[in-house]
Length: 335
Image 1 (cartoon, rainbow, N blue to C red):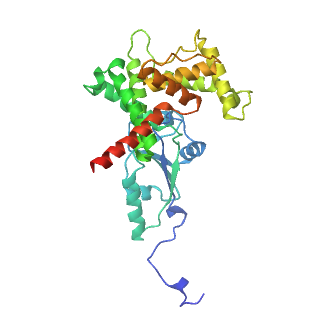
Image 2 (cartoon, one colour):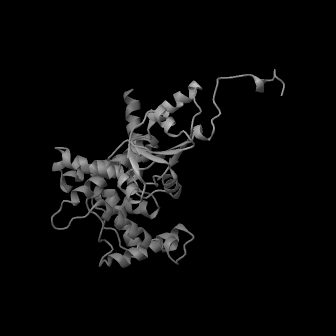
Image 3 (cartoon, rainbow, N blue to C red):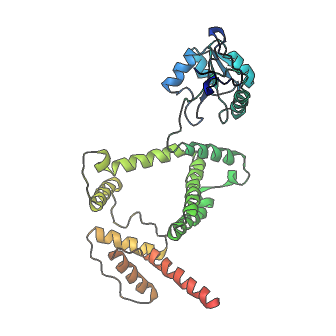
């Protein structure tokens, strides 16, 4: 090698350690609090059992009892970056069971220490030991709702009846966000509707005679969806939306065992939606029911709603769209 080549140019002095001073390895083990403690990945268990030392700053970390039960000796310690590097000397491996957001203070300290060029730094590996599955943040919502129900003076006094109006309001606001095409508003309104579900489920847990939880609610709808989608979860086949709807209606009819096609239609919904739903049930059942003779505006609106449903038009949505256009015309006239 040429003595004047870049490869020969001396840089910051870094010792090439022998076996006794080899820099070793730091494994930063992160876990999700939304996964049951002890359910760790196989690479995580391998790293824990092979480590020379396992450290954790939080003596109340939910993983510790399970690690110790599995024979992993965990030391409750919160070393500095320098102390951790020293603990890895001699090619030793130290696993740090992370708390909070992954020990940012420790990783920042290691980065600063590496930047000085004074030490041969250990290999640093970030090892996620458990992952959030889709929907995992729902567990956070359940926990937050539980605390609010317990500690908030207003929330702790609410009942199903008292909250009913908010369910209606949030549903309308969700529909408005959909019709306006506002994505940010849609996300927020979906959250507000979800809150109503979790809130009512939390209240239901306290019922002395027939309690149920949010898990019961989720379990019920999962069972219903599976049963009503035999073309997905069973042996039935469906290649068109119409065939899917037939499956749905057929399984729903078996489940409900209704004596009338009008059963289950909430009479408290908006009038146009109610009229369209009645017309849909009658048409699906093959019933040719003549409309009452037109005697006033109500019967005229009924006839319009039935006609809209037959043409595949949502009368509520159509009227709202027309109303928005009318609102805009009023504003233009005012301006």
